[in-house]
Length: 148
Figure 1 (cartoon, rainbow, N blue to C red):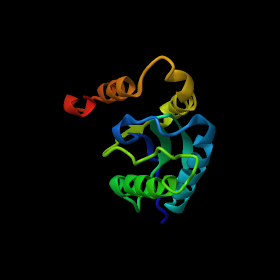
Figure 2 (figure 1 turned 90 degrees about the horizontal axis):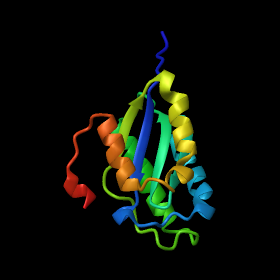
Figure 3 (figure 1 turned 120 degrees about the horizontal axis):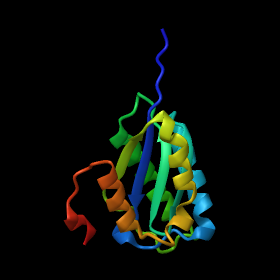
C-alpha cells in the first residue's frame, strides 16, 4: 500500500540582526535557488516571497525529513550560496531560528496570497511586528528578548 500525505507549512525566517540584505531586484535569484533545495528534498514549493530582511515559504514536507533538518538545509545551503553571489554583498547570514506554522488545506490559498503580497504588506507592517503577530495568531509562546 502507498503512503500519502498533505502537510503544508508556512515558514518564516529572517536575516541576521534583521539587516536589510536581500535587495528586491535580486530576490528572484535567491527564490529559485531555494526552490531547487526544496525540490531536492522531495518537497513541493507553493510560494516563496519576502522582503529585504526575511523570507516566507509555503511548502509541503515529505515524511522522510524532519522539519528542523529541512530548515537547516535550506538556511545553511542558501547562506553559503548567498555569500558567493555579488548581488548580495551585505548578506552575512540568516538569524538563528525560524517560525513554522501548519496550514489547513482550506487555508492554503489565503496563505499563498499573503506570501505573494509580502512586498506590499511590508509598506505597512515591519517584520518584527509581523513575526510577533503571527506567533500570537498561532498561539506560540515566545520570549520578548529576541525582539530587542
